[in-house]
Image (cartoon, rainbow over all chains, first blue to last red; front, side, top):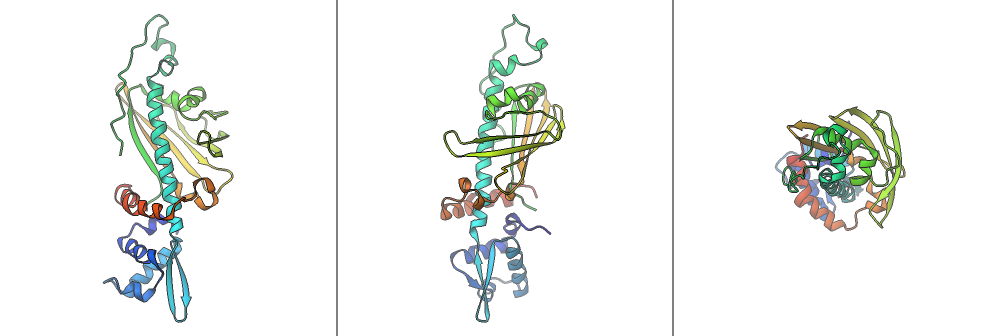
Length: 132
Length: 147
């Protein structure tokens, strides 16, 4: 099964684990102490986090320490952010384009007979809807 | 399973044929969307490559490959950067609504892009990125993005 960062952060316990070890690496036992759930359940979450590349485990003496690899989370969110901005700008530009004479003039001939002035469209359409 | 994706819906005050043309006619695409485009055909299997980026800023080689075309309804193409790992998929879906057109854009597979191999988009500030994740993006993805 393929693991990725979004699977890693989908579970509230895993998000809490990431928060705990974001500041400094912690041993498995220290992490488990913060939760009501069983130690094996925490181990399972940590295994998923390591498979997702969010957590790296180092062995120090008899203890296993979990260290957060937050770089990976940042990379993904930056890509999403970049494209979210990009597409919102482009879809705004599409609205502007469709509103221009050019966008309308390039319709099939029958839609705009040569001597008929093109109807001006309302400038304020379409933008306020469905921006999330 | 949550994925890194962008989904945006808009309604345009134009008939579906005109929106379709703006999305698939190279002359029109160059005007509002991708000025650097050198060739484009809305045909499954068609591939094109070009260099684009921020105006006056860093430029990246882009590669598109058309994977699905349903005239006036849907067009999908792969969007990747040949110099870097990863491959994403852009889909425009149109639905006529009287004289207006409802457009749904989705860009999926963004988790396959690896920022550390692309200096142009590598995280600039560790702390900022983390705060943003916790405060905004995490909420967005975990609560709002459909699994």
